[in-house]
Length: 460
Image (cartoon, rainbow, N blue to C red):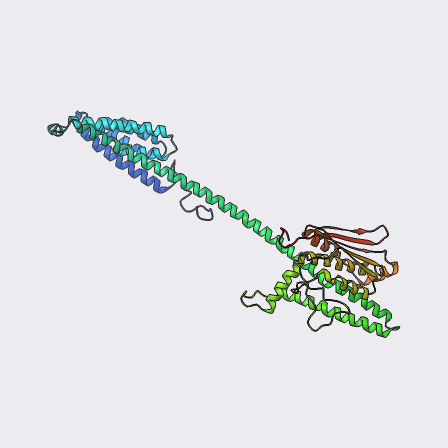
């Protein structure tokens, strides 16, 4: 077969026990040579014994042709070679028969028994030939000469073919083992490739969900406040033009910040990769998006653009890494400026937390206040932040909203229903707990407990 497992030319050939044409040609040629050898040796034996030539040559030729069945019945070939051994015939027959038998899966004791019979018969016949040869008898050889020569002939006729056959059998087994292992590895690689495709598809889906969540967190809060301020401008413009102007200024500031953040994220998604040794604005923006996507960062306001009154740009960290808990007061003031009655209570002593922990807590409060603007207009809200041993607890609760205000705000602040899902994903990704639901008083509560995972701990 070829590398792809398809049958190659000649592999569909089959004749009796042969599977390749060259095997048929090889066995036919060897059988013909063996028949010629046995026939010529039979002529000499007939002359020595006075037997009719045809009576010796014909059986010898048939015995030599038995090599045609050596692949199918190697044991029969060896027995025939032992049978014609007294006539001093079948040397080639014995060699090839023993070799073929040794290459098969025949038990070693069977191979050893047949090889011993063949070797012993060769020793006896060789010794008798030397003992009856007049030329050798005339020579003054030591008594051990003829037995030694006979022994050497017997060993030479048995040991080499058996050893060669066992070597070929071991090599074939090794090749089969390597082939099976290669096929197994090929199947495993196929499975790994399928799993890699599944993991890549899962990663793409997860990245799409994360980008959608980040777009929601970064933009929705400011856009919601802009809508609230726009409604306030519309309401107070005829009565208090000065207050309407302040609200319009806030709308402009928030709009510029939202556009800056949105432009940064979209620019990163469209930018092409650059060489790592040539940092550009796009590469720095890509790094920022990676931080934003992991919940660790938030793009601050563009340089030179004013922030709303009293607002810090999401309280970036010491390296400008994004939202920190120190920015909660500015976030609350932002909602108060939009007309919400909101109170902030902080319990415990604040300490240094990993960026992901502070960013997640900040985003939970931000999204919860945004939901209050959307679904509970005019309702009071309470934000509670508790610094506990090994964790941070965040709770945002609002009272029951005014019915008329709620209907008016729901009409202009549509919701995609992804805010709570995004908060839950952020908190559970850090091993925390998240609970949300209506209160007995008709309001709504969002609670999150986030473990304090330092950078040096697993999962931090």
